[in-house]
Amino acid sequence: MRISHVQNNNYNNRTSRPSFGIWTRAVYKSSEKSLVEPIYRNDTMFFRDPVFWERFTNLLVQKFNEQSNVNVYCYGCSDGSEPYTFAMKVLAKGKDFAQKFLPVQARDIDSIAICRALDSEYELTNDEIFRIENVLDDKYELINDKLITTKNTQNHSLRKYFDYHEYKREYLSYGDKLNVKVKEPLKNSVQFSMGDIFEDYENINPENTVVLARNFWPYIDDISKRSKFFKDLYDHLKEGSLFVIGNFDTKEFPMHINSVKEEVQKAGFKETVVENVFEKR
Ligand SMILES: C[S@@+](CC[C@H](N)C(=O)[O-])C[C@H]1O[C@@H](n2cnc3c(N)ncnc32)[C@H](O)[C@@H]1O
Image 1 (cartoon, rainbow, N blue to C red):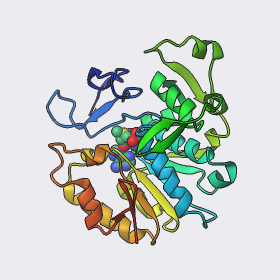
Image 2 (image 1 turned 180 degrees about the horizontal axis):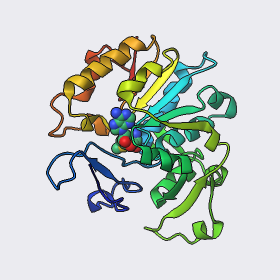
Image 3 (image 1 turned 180 degrees about the vertical axis):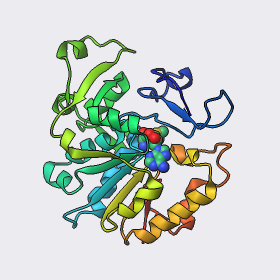
Image 4 (image 1 turned 135 degrees about the horizontal axis):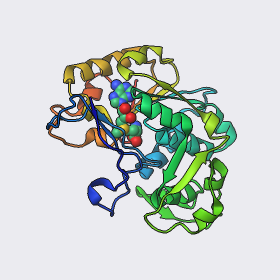
């Protein structure tokens, strides 16, 4: 096994798009330098795909309006940025709304990722800070699939959910990162453990369930294993449950022999009004 160095750079040095680079680490099957694709990468960030999070939370509000409890699982959670993003999004809708979705059960196959998640210490980029302070604090509204500034509310979410040095925040220059530590009530909103989705899915509570499994399907190069899993998960879940994949999963890569989206739909899931969010009907 070969594990690449943690890289704190922007994705392909492109600075025009949000950085993928808070924690970029690749794990390869072979220790030799070869052209083989990594088994997986841990790339992740807070509020990856902010438009998705806005649309997805709006869907949850409508869909689970009547339910008092919703079971949320986040597989491939990496260092925890994704499940904490989910928790912040539902907490922003109010404590009563949030409590039925929390705690999120967050799992990853990688023990190092889970150790980092349990530490819950992050180096936030300016992009992430901007999103936490603006998108969460409702300054933005989703209009024609774009996040537009509509209100001039106070920034409070960063302080609410993270501990950090105020002085460092104030004098953070572009390109610098802010060391933060997740605090309550956010910390309690996610429970981390190791888990391989292919084996662990049978432990999922099948009713009123949301399964996030975003941005790692292209690393599973055994297409028949992948397709069988989607079918098994479909059979396991009860009607009304949601299965969510990521933007990266639907991109065209050479390693995509079949499209992941097609495989998910072939298993029986129907896409909802939110792209990459599927429902068992
Ligand atoms: C590229 S990261 C994506 C992280 C996060 N879901 C996001 O969208 O930002 C992929 C993560 O999936 C994990 N992973 C890969 N195969 C897995 C499996 N079979 N079960 C659970 N986690 C897996 C990897 O360890 C890695 O942390």
